[in-house]
Image 1 (cartoon, rainbow, N blue to C red):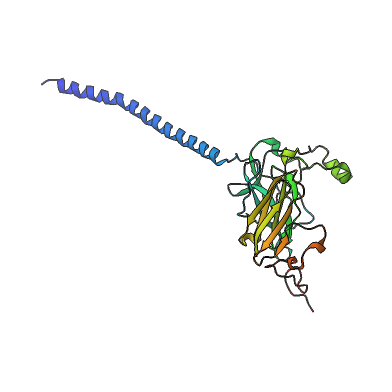
Image 2: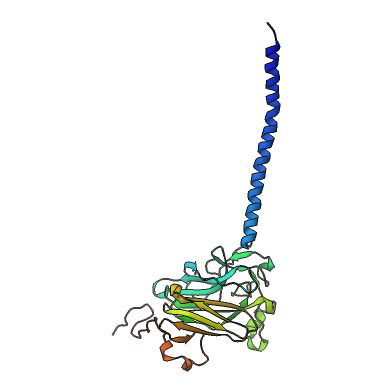
Length: 302
């Protein structure tokens, strides 16, 4: 009997044992390469999409004497408008408060990222961290409010707000921000005291924001200032929402809404209500208010 076959089997087994760690190392290297590739691809996708890192949410506003305490639903309308300097687009955030006869619906401009309304950490907001901060339910913001659960025909004067998109209380130390330059004589003593440590926004940190709701029959909105003329087409959805965002320095803009029957109405409030054509108060497609009904939509008692 020879021991050569046993020796051969032992040598083969030893070779296989030596090969297994190398194979495991190769598999580990391949797995690491795949994971690293996925991470790199994710970072590249985020960079290409222009997404900002997410930061802490904008906190709820302090108590308000004018709005119901109970929060309802919220949504972001489909409308998107680019910022003159790039970054997340602008849109309209809608929040509802209260119920029944006390229901209130509010609309505010905001920066939008991945379908969420928020602000950017710039212009003093959140210490200029460059992140996207989503709006928490009930966050402080400027805009328009109407009774009921829907926004109907609404025209607003243009607002000058920070390019960060934050239009809430700039005196709130939880958020920060800068304020619109305004002469001290136009502010009350209380306001001057509250804003004494809030920096003034530079020209590049401000935007002129014009938004409104033309109603379901609005078909075209034309915006003009000293620097540009733009036209937006409407399809009647979202109560005919429109939004324009411009740099400051273009003067007071004018906005004209054209309705499906050809009627043309101002898209921002005129200085004198007598300047509103009779056909625009209310405009086509918007039912005239019934004085016999109360705020809850019920007929008044005889």
